[in-house]
Length: 100
Image (cartoon, rainbow, N blue to C red; front, side, top):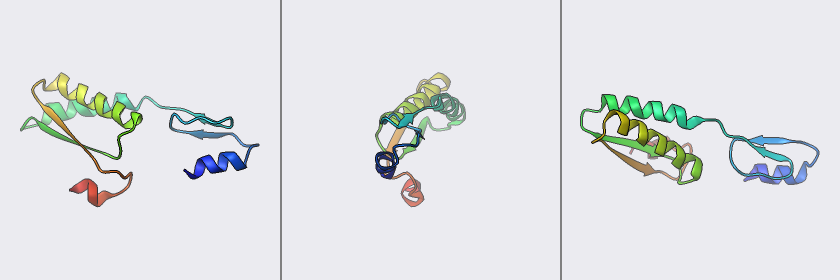
């Protein structure tokens, strides 16, 4: 994590990071991304024809799981019998793995 190394070297600068990691000069912040994911789940639940809905996620960390949970709650609200299938690909930018 290069940003942690930068925080350790550049002590006179304040860093902001979209995560839960904190250091003396690294301030975490988190948007309410789960709200948009809940709405996406509502749309998925309203438009599914099979009741099987896929969710491709980068990795199993709290921020990602929070989004998956919100999505699944939206699906459940729109289509209570639908199932959400989650696949972790272990990467934030591997489009080829996400397509599989």
